[in-house]
Length: 194
Picture 1 (cartoon, one colour):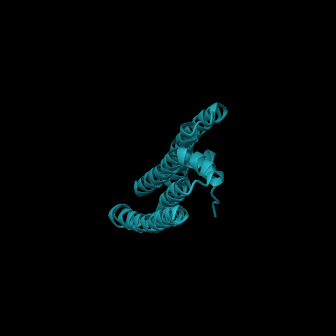
Picture 2 (picture 1 turned 135 degrees about the horizontal axis):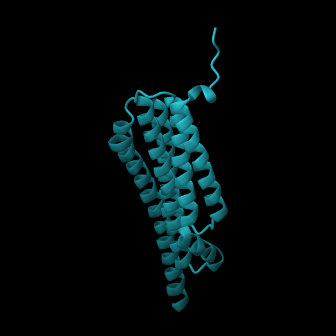
Picture 3 (picture 1 turned 30 degrees about the vertical axis):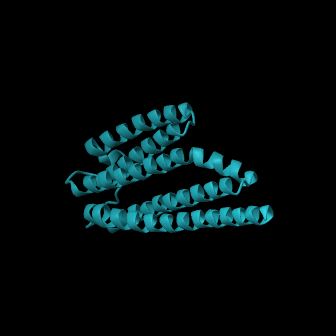
Protein backbone atom coordinates (compact mmCIF):
# COMPACT_ATOMS: atom_id res chain seq x y z
CA UNK A 1 0.00 0.00 0.00
CA UNK A 2 2.83 2.38 0.88
CA UNK A 3 4.57 1.59 -2.42
CA UNK A 4 1.42 2.46 -4.36
CA UNK A 5 1.11 5.80 -2.54
CA UNK A 6 4.78 6.63 -3.21
CA UNK A 7 4.42 5.67 -6.87
CA UNK A 8 1.28 7.82 -7.18
CA UNK A 9 3.12 10.70 -5.54
CA UNK A 10 6.03 10.35 -8.03
CA UNK A 11 3.59 10.30 -10.93
CA UNK A 12 1.87 13.39 -9.54
CA UNK A 13 5.22 15.20 -9.23
CA UNK A 14 6.14 14.26 -12.82
CA UNK A 15 2.75 15.43 -14.09
CA UNK A 16 3.09 18.69 -12.19
CA UNK A 17 6.60 19.21 -13.59
CA UNK A 18 5.35 18.53 -17.12
CA UNK A 19 2.52 21.00 -16.53
CA UNK A 20 5.00 23.64 -15.32
CA UNK A 21 7.07 23.22 -18.50
CA UNK A 22 3.95 23.29 -20.72
CA UNK A 23 2.71 26.45 -18.99
CA UNK A 24 6.16 28.02 -19.33
CA UNK A 25 6.18 27.32 -23.07
CA UNK A 26 2.63 28.64 -23.46
CA UNK A 27 3.18 31.78 -21.37
CA UNK A 28 6.51 32.45 -23.10
CA UNK A 29 4.93 32.15 -26.54
CA UNK A 30 1.95 34.35 -25.63
CA UNK A 31 4.21 37.02 -24.09
CA UNK A 32 6.55 36.93 -27.08
CA UNK A 33 3.73 37.46 -29.55
CA UNK A 34 1.90 40.10 -27.51
CA UNK A 35 5.02 42.13 -26.64
CA UNK A 36 6.26 41.89 -30.24
CA UNK A 37 2.90 43.13 -31.59
CA UNK A 38 2.58 45.87 -28.96
CA UNK A 39 6.07 47.25 -29.62
CA UNK A 40 5.55 46.97 -33.37
CA UNK A 41 2.15 48.68 -33.44
CA UNK A 42 2.49 51.29 -30.70
CA UNK A 43 6.16 52.24 -31.01
CA UNK A 44 7.95 51.16 -34.19
CA UNK A 45 5.24 51.86 -36.77
CA UNK A 46 4.55 55.25 -35.22
CA UNK A 47 8.19 56.27 -35.02
CA UNK A 48 9.30 54.97 -38.41
CA UNK A 49 6.38 55.61 -40.74
CA UNK A 50 8.59 57.11 -43.43
CA UNK A 51 11.87 55.22 -43.17
CA UNK A 52 11.49 51.55 -44.04
CA UNK A 53 15.13 50.60 -43.38
CA UNK A 54 15.02 51.89 -39.81
CA UNK A 55 11.70 50.13 -39.26
CA UNK A 56 13.15 46.82 -40.51
CA UNK A 57 16.23 47.10 -38.29
CA UNK A 58 14.12 47.97 -35.27
CA UNK A 59 11.71 45.17 -36.08
CA UNK A 60 14.57 42.64 -36.14
CA UNK A 61 15.82 43.92 -32.78
CA UNK A 62 12.27 43.66 -31.45
CA UNK A 63 12.07 40.03 -32.55
CA UNK A 64 15.40 39.22 -30.90
CA UNK A 65 14.31 40.88 -27.66
CA UNK A 66 11.00 39.03 -27.57
CA UNK A 67 12.71 35.71 -28.36
CA UNK A 68 14.99 36.26 -25.39
CA UNK A 69 11.96 36.94 -23.20
CA UNK A 70 10.23 33.78 -24.44
CA UNK A 71 13.25 31.55 -23.91
CA UNK A 72 13.92 33.08 -20.51
CA UNK A 73 10.46 32.04 -19.37
CA UNK A 74 10.89 28.57 -20.88
CA UNK A 75 14.27 28.13 -19.15
CA UNK A 76 12.81 29.24 -15.84
CA UNK A 77 9.94 26.76 -16.14
CA UNK A 78 12.32 23.91 -17.08
CA UNK A 79 14.55 24.88 -14.16
CA UNK A 80 11.65 24.70 -11.69
CA UNK A 81 10.40 21.44 -13.20
CA UNK A 82 13.86 19.90 -12.75
CA UNK A 83 13.92 21.08 -9.15
CA UNK A 84 10.50 19.49 -8.60
CA UNK A 85 11.65 16.09 -9.85
CA UNK A 86 14.99 16.48 -8.04
CA UNK A 87 17.11 16.16 -11.17
CA UNK A 88 20.21 18.04 -10.09
CA UNK A 89 22.53 17.60 -13.09
CA UNK A 90 20.83 20.14 -15.35
CA UNK A 91 19.23 21.99 -12.49
CA UNK A 92 22.59 23.40 -11.38
CA UNK A 93 23.43 24.56 -14.91
CA UNK A 94 20.02 26.15 -15.37
CA UNK A 95 20.32 27.75 -11.95
CA UNK A 96 23.48 29.53 -13.08
CA UNK A 97 21.79 30.61 -16.31
CA UNK A 98 18.69 31.93 -14.53
CA UNK A 99 20.85 33.90 -12.11
CA UNK A 100 22.55 35.68 -15.04
CA UNK A 101 19.39 35.99 -17.14
CA UNK A 102 18.39 39.49 -15.96
CA UNK A 103 21.86 40.77 -16.87
CA UNK A 104 21.60 39.22 -20.31
CA UNK A 105 18.16 40.73 -20.90
CA UNK A 106 19.31 44.20 -19.81
CA UNK A 107 22.48 43.80 -21.94
CA UNK A 108 20.40 43.12 -25.07
CA UNK A 109 17.90 45.86 -24.15
CA UNK A 110 20.69 48.47 -23.82
CA UNK A 111 22.01 47.53 -27.25
CA UNK A 112 18.45 47.59 -28.64
CA UNK A 113 17.86 51.10 -27.29
CA UNK A 114 21.24 52.23 -28.65
CA UNK A 115 20.54 50.99 -32.15
CA UNK A 116 17.06 52.50 -32.04
CA UNK A 117 18.35 55.90 -30.89
CA UNK A 118 21.18 55.85 -33.43
CA UNK A 119 18.70 55.18 -36.25
CA UNK A 120 16.40 57.94 -35.01
CA UNK A 121 19.24 60.45 -34.78
CA UNK A 122 20.60 59.46 -38.21
CA UNK A 123 17.15 59.99 -39.73
CA UNK A 124 16.80 63.33 -37.96
CA UNK A 125 20.16 64.47 -39.37
CA UNK A 126 19.19 63.29 -42.87
CA UNK A 127 15.96 65.31 -42.66
CA UNK A 128 17.84 68.56 -41.97
CA UNK A 129 19.12 70.89 -44.66
CA UNK A 130 22.85 70.72 -43.93
CA UNK A 131 25.91 69.94 -46.01
CA UNK A 132 27.13 66.33 -46.05
CA UNK A 133 24.19 65.10 -44.06
CA UNK A 134 24.69 61.50 -45.26
CA UNK A 135 28.25 61.32 -43.94
CA UNK A 136 27.38 63.08 -40.69
CA UNK A 137 24.41 60.77 -40.10
CA UNK A 138 26.60 57.67 -40.60
CA UNK A 139 29.16 59.03 -38.14
CA UNK A 140 26.47 59.90 -35.59
CA UNK A 141 24.90 56.46 -35.94
CA UNK A 142 28.26 54.78 -35.37
CA UNK A 143 29.11 56.93 -32.35
CA UNK A 144 25.76 56.39 -30.62
CA UNK A 145 25.71 52.65 -31.29
CA UNK A 146 29.30 52.24 -30.06
CA UNK A 147 28.50 54.20 -26.89
CA UNK A 148 25.57 51.94 -26.09
CA UNK A 149 27.56 48.77 -26.84
CA UNK A 150 30.33 49.93 -24.50
CA UNK A 151 27.72 50.74 -21.86
CA UNK A 152 26.17 47.29 -22.17
CA UNK A 153 29.59 45.62 -21.93
CA UNK A 154 30.34 47.57 -18.76
CA UNK A 155 26.92 46.58 -17.38
CA UNK A 156 27.59 42.85 -17.67
CA UNK A 157 30.92 43.30 -15.92
CA UNK A 158 33.35 43.33 -18.82
CA UNK A 159 36.08 45.79 -17.99
CA UNK A 160 36.32 47.74 -21.22
CA UNK A 161 38.83 50.42 -20.24
CA UNK A 162 40.97 49.91 -23.34
CA UNK A 163 37.88 49.98 -25.54
CA UNK A 164 36.70 53.11 -23.77
CA UNK A 165 40.00 54.88 -24.43
CA UNK A 166 39.90 53.80 -28.07
CA UNK A 167 36.33 55.08 -28.26
CA UNK A 168 37.42 58.47 -26.90
CA UNK A 169 40.12 58.73 -29.57
CA UNK A 170 37.57 57.79 -32.24
CA UNK A 171 35.21 60.46 -30.92
CA UNK A 172 37.91 63.12 -31.25
CA UNK A 173 38.71 62.02 -34.78
CA UNK A 174 35.03 61.87 -35.74
CA UNK A 175 34.37 65.29 -34.22
CA UNK A 176 37.22 66.70 -36.30
CA UNK A 177 35.82 64.98 -39.41
CA UNK A 178 32.35 66.43 -38.80
CA UNK A 179 33.79 69.91 -38.40
CA UNK A 180 35.80 69.49 -41.61
CA UNK A 181 32.74 68.12 -43.44
CA UNK A 182 30.75 71.19 -42.45
CA UNK A 183 33.45 73.83 -42.93
CA UNK A 184 35.65 72.46 -45.77
CA UNK A 185 34.03 69.37 -47.30
CA UNK A 186 36.33 69.48 -50.33
CA UNK A 187 39.24 68.41 -48.12
CA UNK A 188 37.62 65.01 -47.59
CA UNK A 189 35.14 64.50 -50.39
CA UNK A 190 36.62 64.33 -53.86
CA UNK A 191 33.85 64.97 -56.32
CA UNK A 192 34.46 64.56 -60.01
CA UNK A 193 34.14 67.82 -61.89
CA UNK A 194 33.06 67.14 -65.44
